Length: 109
Image 1 (cartoon, rainbow, N blue to C red):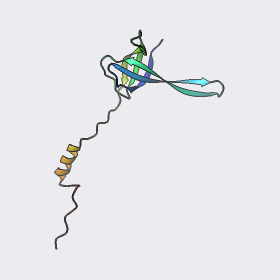
Image 2: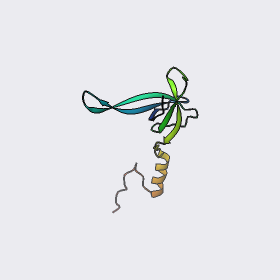
Image 3: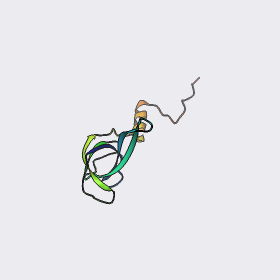
Image 4: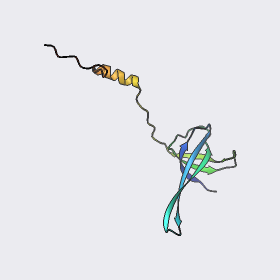
């Protein structure tokens, strides 16, 4: 077997990831290129992979029933979105002097 490159689609297991590998092949009847995706379970010793990372897999001896690949290298890390916490939003609104929960005061006459 040879090395394959794919994208991590699941890292919910300890020391294991699921990697989706895309390939194109020519369909002789329809004379078109068809894309197929294969999912491989791979060993990630130090739990470094996140969802969306592009990784290179090396074949190895069977480590379990479905796992016979090992993550050789992380080629590109995925961008991770971290939302702002609600406490920082409240403090920024208080520093500006705007309270979004109360209506503006009535005009004085």
